[in-house]
Image (cartoon, rainbow, N blue to C red; front, side):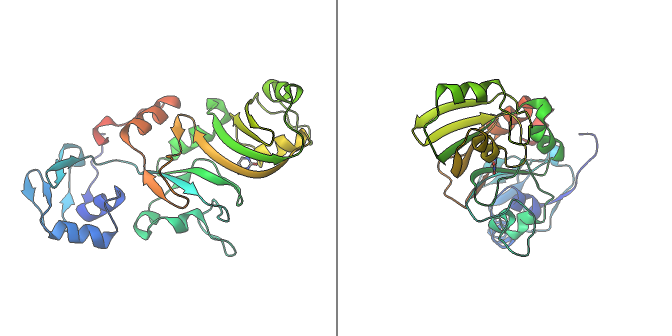
Length: 251
Ligand code: URA
């Protein structure tokens, strides 16, 4: 980093997921936070040089980050949008303090779909994860109505399925789990892609759950509607997958 970023202590800790602004202020007031080995009780303390500042909570060093990245286990019924007048949106599921950050969703899920949503303040990361150029795989657990998937169907998926409107899809992979259930891995994100692919082979999607985006797997410990920050290893592999430099000083 060449430009110096100035950060307020309470804002930095909130962004990192240490609680709401109120909780973080109480934490600071309780003398558990040190900045360069000095106890700081002023929640508005400005970290003027985050790259070279050592922050500890209860004696354990915490890592400041330039960007914030969250994984969310989206429940059905929510739109992947910032706001909507009719339906709840995924941003309703994160605390207000985090909502004020400029998050982009790396790919959407339909309102009735569930599973992994990645929200990031790094627009370039989101863009690359969604761009067909990078061929980032997304795996979905699909439950469908109709006949079990045959090997003829599977080869259509593998060689590039043609949708009803003649759109040609990139090759996709299938793993058959049962007569009505598959794992489907695609490397692009066309509108309603999975539903349209299944429709093209005469099946109807009953439920759709995203399990992964590239190397990033939905944490099985996240209940529906819960979110958590990405950890260091997850970030390193995501940035690596899209050939993007990551500022290791912030990890
Ligand atoms: N494909 C779909 O049809 N819907 C989604 O939400 C994601 C992929």
